[in-house]
Image (cartoon, one colour):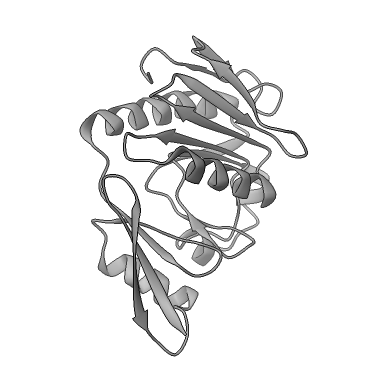
Length: 201
């Protein structure tokens, strides 16, 4: 059995396999991430490790603008917590994912222990945003968005900057899409939240 590391290059992931007795345990994966804090690391439900380079500067600015808008709304709303792209979550299927922005209802977050909160929390965010960068394959992100929904997210937005399309995911529905919207509403799942797209495009 082998553990596979997927290195995200400019276009597609490169798989590198290392012989091992078994895939990394959750604790080993956490230690691996601790030892490589300068990298953004995820893990698939199959145990494959995905290593991605730091975001380009313009993408980082747009990720920041996403997080700021979500954070301002979350502070006013008061029913949940917002997270930026550095936060990792362990989904029910075993994958560890780091969406570009996320929000979790406070009542669900507060059930977790302090140790769980201080690790890759075993919870799927209620709301996730993924921002497609120039190096991201659209179909890979679409699969990831469906994974969030299948694991408990109630709303997900995939923002395709290149084509100025926002894909909207909800449970038990086909993804919808908006072409070049000026804003995207989070109602009814996130009452009153509206993402202004001018600084995201």
